[in-house]
Structure formats: C-alpha cells, structure tokens
Amino acid sequence: MRKIGSQCRDSLDYSGYTLHKRINDSEVILMAYDKVLQLWVANDDYAGYVIEVDGIGYEFICSVNAEDINRLEELSYELADTNNISVKENN
Image 1: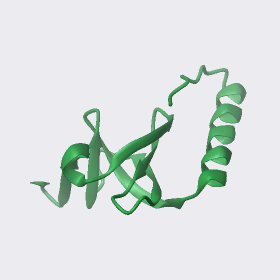
Image 2 (image 1 turned 180 degrees about the horizontal axis):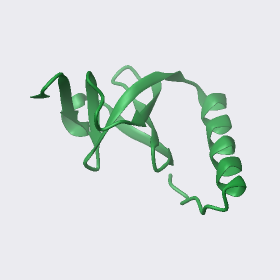
Image 3 (image 1 turned 120 degrees about the vertical axis):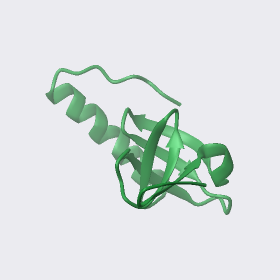
Image 4 (image 1 turned 180 degrees about the vertical axis):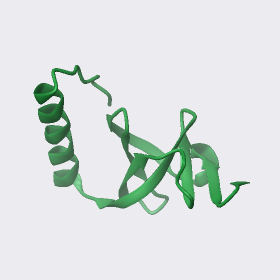
C-alpha cells in the first residue's frame, strides 16, 4: 500500500480484489476475496482508501448484486443515449 498524503492506494493485484466488470469509464465492479461484488467509482483524488485500476484510483461506493449491476448498465446506456455519447462494451 502506498500512502500519498491522506490517500492510501493499493494496486488491484495487491488489494486482493479482482476486476469483475467495467460499467463505464468511471465505474467498475470489483469482486472481494469473499466473492462479494462491490461498486467502485473513479476518484483519483479521494482522501481515503483507493484501489488503482489501469492507473486510476477508485473509491468504494457500495456492495451490489447481479440486479444492481444490470440496472447500473441500463442507466449508463440511457445517459449515453441522452448525451449522444458512445459507450464502450466492456466485459
């Protein structure tokens, strides 16, 4: 774990989490060692614990289940359609 000011930062490998799914460019689902799925949101400047995924720091938001993940994906696509933005398909 690296300490940067008030931030504690782990790499994904060192954290013990695995990348389960990318919802969009700023939201990922990580799987904890106990198989619990969690939503993490990109916030490189968060003053707490972050997990680094592809060079970006992510902060924990909440635990989620499969239904939550499906709804997050739907919302992501709805927002992209509303803003005329293309969303990358990530698995």
